Image (cartoon, rainbow, N blue to C red; front, side, top):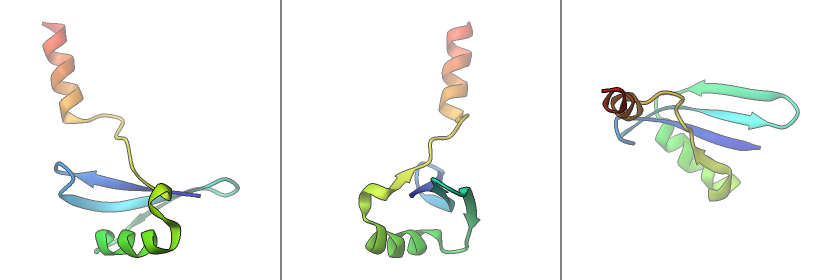
Length: 70
């Protein structure tokens, strides 16, 4: 099992998190206090099970793509 956190605004805002399981797939949770929830989960799961979600498309990547295209 692995927990992926959705981070926005240069890691200032945590929208929610995904819980990935081997047998049942992936579950997406959006909660009001995701930061507190993840800290509580870290006590039970450990630091190695909670990771940062890698976005498919980020503003930084889009700007780099436009710079290379010129």
